[in-house]
Structure formats: structure tokens, C-alpha cells
Length: 226
Length: 397
Ligand SMILES: Nc1ncnc2c1ncn2[C@@H]1O[C@H](COP(=O)(O)OP(=O)(O)OP(=O)(O)O)[C@@H](O)[C@H]1O
Ligand SMILES: [Mg+2]
Image (cartoon, rainbow over all chains, first blue to last red; front, top):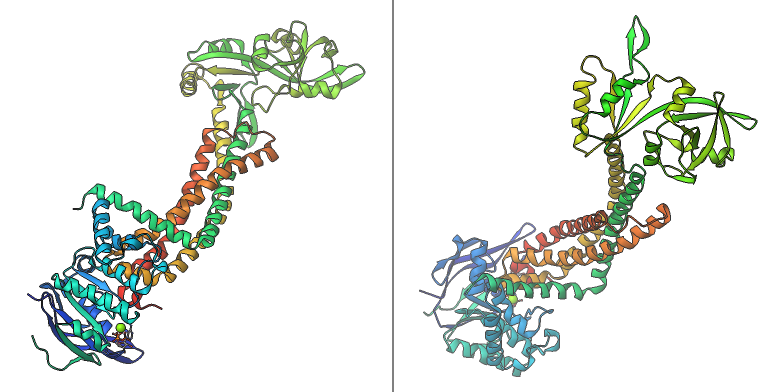
């Protein structure tokens, strides 16, 4: 079984009379525990591809199989459950909820799952400690640096113990140093067994990956080993 | 892992989120709340005032619900194209005695009435003259000056005394007979049986002598309870009216219910007009929530991405509307008490009916409509928020 398997996946956006193939026939297998890096220029389809892997969007055609489950068969609530329980997202813009503290942001996915307050608080504190930002637990995102916000976002992504972490340019808005901290934290999770798919246009990031694939105009280029 | 108590523990955090979102745009939320306050206040205040107005009017008809009036049967018939009246214009004494001995009768008063010219000093005027026994007069009316004594003397109504400058001791002449004014009655409210304000009341015996009456003009009967009204009516039909229709029974209960109906209708109508202000408040909530939905598109995308059901998003936004509604409705209902007080003071010059169950009822009703309005107008934006596509919402700039 693969963590994620894409079978000839296409995503077409219709703009006016024109069809835009954001993802154009991608087949890809991500092994359990693998750290995969998808490299591509701006507009090449990285975010779209990652969103399809994470069930944030449905492909126009093709199949997305997550942990052996064919997601094309699933309804809205089932897809939501997959996002909630099996997948963690890390975005370039952190996307923290501004009204919630760092701590509460980490609590949120667990709240959505219906986990008890006690367990939520234990787990949130544990994750903030792992990310080295437990001292900032009660601060709002606006009171945190970019690097710290991204670490809160990673903690939030890990809240429900997902097996898969999907990262969309996680260091894109960070300075080199904070970027390194964030990448090391992601790598650390990968070493603990979490499958990581990371998309970026930054070649330096590829050194953290087990495998690199390139995307251009919605298509994978180069060889696909494994 | 999931248990009901855990779910409830979770709800508190949803409430916190909703509260903070409302606080984020404090001024906008406050304006929406003020709209609801005004709407609820208008609706509830008018409801309260309407109820108090009704209570004030009905207080004039107190104790008549158990009252039944019995008139001689009087029917108009068409005979050969000419309207003729048949029957008699009085109830004969034997029939009257039979009526008041029927079951269910708690108390009664025989009443004779006629219109007569009355002489006072040099003047002559017309007035209604009632013949009643002393006990009944005492039961129905109270005296302002003098006392209620009817043997050879009379009592006069407040307005009549006022108009003619009558005093206790004044002497009136009715059909050649002289009556001393023994008492002047207090002003009485509107009644359906005896209207004493412009009348003279003498004893039944004096009435007989003066007008040569053969019976009574009508009988006032008080039954034991409201339920007995119908039973008494049935009894009259079966006994007194068995062979021929001798009397008509007229229940005052009906009048009360008509007054009730009319006032309720007017009250509802005014409340509906006041409801327009709630409608405006509803539109403002709709506006606030829609703006909030659009502004928070990205956040909604994030919530969906990390595993919120669409129903959870719907719930969160409805919760915000609900909080606005609860705050606005509660404050509005409390202020409606002040509103009701003011209108009562201005129009009724009295607030004695303000603190009653009906007031609480209208406060609750105002709150109900306030909440309903916020929920209804909060629903569309909440639904819109819950229908967003996660990726599109995340990409929204
Ligand atoms: N909703 C949409 N409607 C139309 N076109 C879209 C839509 N979303 C994405 N696209 C197009 O699809 C292509 C791929 O977009 P995508 O965001 O996946 O690229 P990306 O590699 O993530 O780019 P970036 O590095 O800028 O984030 C782009 O040409 C983009 O304009
Ligand atoms: Mg992108």
C-alpha cells in the first residue's frame, strides 16, 4: 500500500472559453514514510497537485488513492474526515486562525474531531514543546514572527496524528534561518515515520527529500524512480 | 474517544470562537445588536401597552362575566308586509319569581325602568327612572354623598346630580310624586344592565305606584360560575320558554370576549407595524453576517482544510447570529418594560397593569421574534459560508 497514489490525475479549470490544465495527467506513487519533494516553477501546478493529494479538491479525471482508499468514491463528509484524521496541511501563508491563540490553533483540529478538552490540552502543549514554541502558547498569531507562526501551523497539522504531511512552500515566506528550523522540524517528523510531500520552487529544499520529482505545466518530468 | 460530554466541552470553544469573531468587528456587531434592541423593544412595548389598555377597558366591565340579563321576549314579525311587534315589554312577576328560583342562580336583581319627565325647582327635564330594591342598588353601586335609602326617597346618578346641582335633601317630583334625594352615587363605568349616571333610582314599590307597572323591565341574574351561564340558559329554555318564548337571555360574557377580540386584533396589528423595525434589524444582521462571511473566506477555507464539516461552519456562523440575537433580544425586552411604562404613563396615566404575567408574555414574545429574525437573517450567510469550496476559499484574496 502507498501513502498516496495518483492515477492519471487531471485538473482542468475553465476560464472563459479556455481550458487550463493545472494538472495534466499526473501518475505518482508516494511510499509510506517517504519524504517527497515536488519542484516546479510558479504556476506549474504544484498547489493544485498538493490539494488533490490532500482531498481539498476533486480531480476532473483520474484517481486519488489515500492510504488505499479510492477518494473518488467518497462523499463530502468522508473527504472531510480524511483531511481531519489522515492528513496535515502546512501552507506558505501559515493560515492560522487570527482570533485563536497559538495553543487554541493547535487545539482546533482536535476540537473538530470531538476530542476531550483534557486530551486536547495535553496534546497541544506536547506539540508546542516539540516545536519549541510552548512559551508563546497564549499569543495570537499577529504577535508571532513568521517562523513561529509556521511552527504553530506544523503543530496544528500534526494535532490529530496524521500519517501524511502535505507542505506547500512552507519556507516560502521565511528567512533562511527560520526556514531551516522549520525544515528540520518537518524532517524530524518524517524520521518519526510521517510521510511528507513538500512542493517548492526552492532547489535548496530538495536536500531534505528522499526523492525529487519535477513538475512543469501540470506534468511530471524526469524519471520517476520508485 | 468521542463521548457526549467531550462534545459539550467542545461547544464552549465554539462559543468562544463566535464571541471573538463578533468582537473583532465590535462596532458592526453593536450596531446590529442595537437594531435588534429597537425592534424587540418596539414590538414588546406595543404588546405590553395593548394588553394594559385592554385591561384598563375591561376593568370597567368587572364582575359582569357571571352576569346574565333577562329581557322580555320581544320579536319583530312581518305580517302582511307590515312590521308588527308581538310579546310584552315586561316580565310578569310570576315568571320573574320562577326564573330567580331556577338552579345556578346565586343572586339577582329585578329592575324596572322607564323614561319620565321630572320636575326640580322650576325646571322640567327628562331622565331614566329605575325601580330597584335597596339591596341590589347597594350591591351594584356605591354612594358618593348621603346614603342609599329608597323608602319614599331616591338616589341619583353622578352626572345628573352634577348637571342639575342636586344635593342630598333636594326634592324631585316624578309624575306628581315627590322624592327626597337620599344619596348621590359615585360615577359608574360603562355597564350593560343599569346605567345610573344620568338616572334616578327609586324603590320597586314606588316604581309600581308611580308608573303602574305590571312587571319588571329586566332581571339581572348572577350565576355561580362562568360554566353555569350556559346551564342556566338551558334551564330557562326548558322551563320558562318551554311553551312559548317568554324571555330572552343575554349573556355579558360575549361582550367581554368581543372586547377581548377587538383589542387583541388592534394590538396584533400595531405589533405587526412595529415588526417592520425588526425586519430592518434583520436586514442589517444579514448585511453584517454577509460581510463577515466574505471577509473570512480564507479562514473558512482553513477550517474546511483542517477537517471542519460544512455543518460545523454553518453552526459557527449561526451561533454568531444567535449571540447577537440573544443579547439584542434580552436588552430589548428589558427596555420594553421601560417603553411600556412610558406609554402607559402618557396614555393611560397609570401603570397598575404593567407588572403582570401578560407583560412577561409580551417580553418573551418580543424576544422570540428578535431571535427568530436574527436566526432567519443569519441563516443565508451561514449557509453561504458552509458551501464554500475549500481550495477556492484558501486561494481567495
Ligand atoms: N481557480 C482557478 N481558475 C483558473 N485557473 C486556475 C485556478 N487555480 C489555479 N489556476 C491556474 O492553474 C495553474 C496552476 O496553479 P497552481 O496554483 O497550482 O500553481 P503553483 O505551482 O502552485 O504556483 P505558485 O508557485 O505561484 O504557487 C496556474 O496557471 C493557475 O493560474
Ligand atoms: Mg502554489
